[in-house]
Amino acid sequence: MSVHKSTPDYIIEVSWEVCNKVGGIYTVLSTRAKTILTKTDAQLMFIGPDLWKETANPLFKEDKRLMAGWRKKATEEGLNIRIGRWMIPGEPVAVLVDFTPYYNIKNDIYAEAWNLFSVDSLHAYGDYDEASMFSYAAAKVAESYYRNEILKKAKTSQADNNCQLPKVIYQAHEWMTGLGALFLKHWIPSIATIFTTHATSIGRSIAGNMKPLYDYMEGYNGDQMAEELNMQSKHSIEKQAAHRVDCFTTVSEITDRECAQLLEKKADVITVNGFEDDFVSKGAAFTAKRKEARKVMLNVASKLLGQEFADDTIIVSTGGRYEFRNKGIDILLESLNRLAHEPSLDRDVLAFINVPAWVKGTREDLRARLDNCQLSIANCQLETPVITHELYNMDDDKALSMMRAIGLNNAPESRVKVIFVPCYLNGDDGIFNLPYYDLLPGDDLAVYPSYYEPWGYTPLESVAFHVPTITTDLAGFGLWANSLKGEYSQLEDGVKVIHRTDSNWDEAANEIKNSILAFTKMDAKMVTQLRRRAADISKKALWDKFVKYYLEAYEVALSK
Image (cartoon, rainbow, N blue to C red; front, side, top):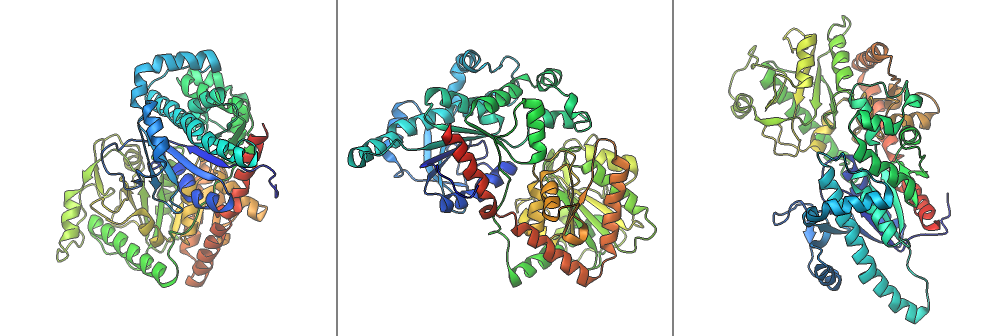
């Protein structure tokens, strides 16, 4: 839709990940904000949970002068908020709300949610209460902002220009904010509500519980599966929000298929995820970062494994949340094991599994080796030479258990070495001490063989850093990459898309293995071409290309 007749005057976006870096939704919101500000004339405001309270939050800068009049009014109404700027490109206004006071009346809130929207909170557990109280508090903030700030300004404008009421969008992300969207639509119907699911709670749970999601998709009933998987309350919020808001969106065609089957509601608009590449260095700066990243990773591997690695070692990585099956960590380990037994492999492959786990702390023996540059480590592996940090659950961690089971143990004679990095790479992990985005340029190849991946920011980030990437057609990003070519994207294109189903594990594992093997055989000229093509693909996913879907969603919501 190229021309949008109805554009918002105000956009309020709500997410648990506003000023709170947890996962992919943080990337969606934080990279898109600047584009929304430049592509619309709307006033943009984000609402997030105040989890830091009195502790300094590096992502949030409070400004007590900002909307001071409304803050005073909101405080009088019993809202405990802080107003400031989210320290991301564009520095949009952010409001952090303390939701804990609502625990005192949560049963009343849940009863009202049942009576008004048929939301079943009876089976709530885990993070349900925390998310729901935040969601309710965020809606209260939006209500106060609308009545005391937006309408106040509108009345002044009406007196001068006799204009209409302002057009306001309230966009709620994921089930954690759905309850508030329902209440706000009930309290103030003139606010246009959008609910965006980035992954259905039931779809993710089916996949995570080792059930075949795709081969039997048409046979699943969302309500029935919610009961079987003890997910009734989260599913209930998600389903009711999808049906009742003014516009329901999701992030990819593959997730829309889930929504249609499990929530019984197709998305009104598919808002494909983009990103901004401001954080990707250019030219000589990028080359320097790549050189430094490789130096650090090869040094860590050398000290852990007691052997030197040549500069032409192929560095492979994967990363993301620790969803062992959903993110394809299991099939990647199997593929690497098969590669290790491939007779034609004639180069060293060093694979890093960058997935935060139940980390206890830095390995002191490895840290000591890294600190002592003069120490001779030749032919002297550390104990458990497959992991960089200590875990609380070393004996039953899924990745370590599978590596032990299949014999992927970094034997000195093996050409394939696998290193599990079970911590957040924030620049202060004690081993690498470089942020994730400073290590990523050092990779030669990235592999994200996901089984369940509604979109897939990790492969998109990798190609942005010029890293050729392997993914699957069960990831939204993989399907999008295929759409660019009109057929399955190949490694020579910069992104290799593997076909995955519930029943082709063996074939998919072999294809991943063969793709990595093929990469090791490429000459420097071909690798340079692949790196350029990968970066070119990332340019097609910038927000200025994808923001049109949000503008369409705004129009759909406002029209209702």
